Amino acid sequence: MMGEYVVFQMWSGYRESLIRAHQFYVDQAKSRLLTQFDNISAEADKAADDWLSERGQRYFDPDRHDPSDFYEGAEDAGIEFYQLLTEMQERTRLSVIAGFFHEWEKKLRQWLVDEIKHWHRGDFTKERIWKANVEELFELLESFGWALKATPWFSALDACRLVVNVHKHGDGPSLASLKAAYPKFLVHPLAGTGLTLSPIWDRLTHEHLQVKDADLEEFAEAIASFWREIPENVVDSQVVAPPSWFVKVLEKDRASKVKV
Image: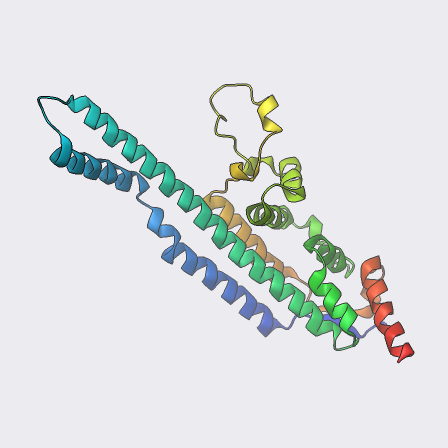
């Protein structure tokens, strides 16, 4: 190899289009979806009032009923409404995060495939890029000489990956990794009560996954930072230690052509 051949290039126009599309998704998701949950408390109060009005008109008999029972029922209805709407808000927020993370992942894989085909032809490599897990992609990117994992925003990107995996797959390896590396995203309902949670902590499941609006913002900014900072040009001499899985699949493609 010549040592100055560009093997990966992030054209500035494409870089900017990726960032604009990502930011558009985030902004529109917040304004069109997440703002619908801005007045949960007021909506819960209205649900309680509606319950009391409906039940009072239809069922209340002053000779047989204690008014406090109806007020208690209205309060329970309001609490249930608040809890259900809060759960919907949390699922919507997670879905928004999953949406922009998966789009980032697809764009990254496609960019890698498109850049590789400029200097290497082979279906095995293309297929392997699309099958690689995100950690393998990080490994490939770092082989460019890009200290990706040392960036100040990488932990947010990595946490986003695990949060999305737990949201999608439930209990599994990503849950264990999230618990070990970023436990703040797993919140037990008894947290903050003063009770000792040590025995309970080990039984945390995907049902305890919790992210806030601030987390969404941090995840979104990490993806924007990724696109801003990915190297513009990577020449072949910079790729001194490509991951073994990448080398093997390149060799597999070459061997298949020799056989033909």
